[in-house]
Image (cartoon, rainbow, N blue to C red; front, side):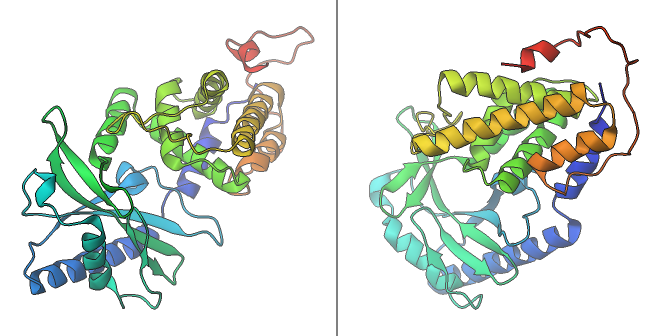
Length: 322
């Protein structure tokens, strides 16, 4: 058995957003906020409030692979409206306001998508600008409504999702955040068509804490995820709207690719941790699922148990085999 925890911690540093990269995208974000605010004030509208959302806010973002774009979600919260939706402007109108404000900011024209206005930068990243108004739901609770161009104002509360995730971090520590990043790096490298939000939810709902052993925690968590979605292939959002299944539009082909990919990841993790003794050979296996960003181990026997001809029962080892 190998202890690969330190190598996973190195991997976490390698895939985490670099300081210079964070500075670049936050400069772009702040410049857009300034342009939008100025244009709104110029047109006699209230200055919006802003909130960085998604993986960047949750600190689960990973560096994009070569050729891929990084995306930052910068929520725009319109001000000065009552909670009565009948008094709100149309979603098409607010999209046009934001699109007008950011037009010309980059050499690429802004893309007006159903759920946001996207500003694309030449430097391999884009910033999504979803637009919200705070309202009341059927239970008279405060909730954010997203300006969806085709569906109108729909419930969507990214702040609540960030708070939901943070509650798991508060309870379990930073390991859960690292596991989300490992799985995002895996899906990027293997080209698995699954949303980062879905992976985040699946990790939280199936997390197995193993202190000082990210390798074993990841293996146990992936095993639990497979068990949960093989039985019931759904991933419901934990916050409003809670009836939204992030797997609802997943084709049978994509479903099989996700399950096959997870099973392959589980097998590679199990082999690297429990069967290999040479650290380099173990990391050669892991680079097949994480890519060369996963660090290379040392080329000698680093097994933490004495070699024996007898079979060894290592806790949960047997549970990792189908």
